[in-house]
Image 1 (tube, rainbow, N blue to C red):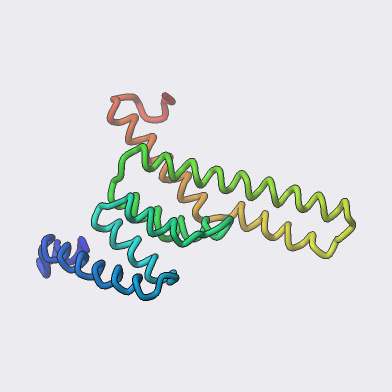
Image 2 (image 1 turned 45 degrees about the horizontal axis):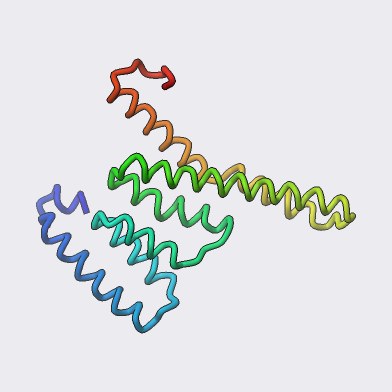
Length: 168
C-alpha cells in the first residue's frame, strides 16, 4: 500500500476506499460461508490495515486455532500487521506475553510427554517429541518476538533519554 501511495499511483483515500470495499465483500461472503479460514484471514488483514486492531483480532480469534499452530499463524500473519501499524505498547506487550506463554506451555507439555514415553517404554514416540521440541526452539515467531521486544525496549530508552543498553 505504501509503495502505491509513494509512487503517486493511488492516494491514501483511494486505497482506504478499496480496502473498505474489499472488506464489505469479504464480510458478505462470510455470511454465506461461516467457516472459511481464508475469508477470516483476509478480513483480519484488512481490518488490521485499516487500523481496527480489535476487529482484526476478533476475526483472527474466531479461527479457533489451537496450540502450536498459533505460533505459525500469529508470527507470519498477525504480528507483522500489528508492528507495521505502530500499535500501542500495551497491545504489543499483550501479544508478546501470549507468544511467551504459548512457547512455555507447549515446551513444558512436550517435555512431560517425552518423559512419559520413556516411563511407559513407548520409545517409538521419542523422535516425534524431540523433533517437536526442536521446532519450538527454532520458531521464527519466537525470534520475531525477541527482536520486536528488543526494538520496543530500545525505542522506549531513546524516548526516555536513557543511554542505549541501560536497563530500566
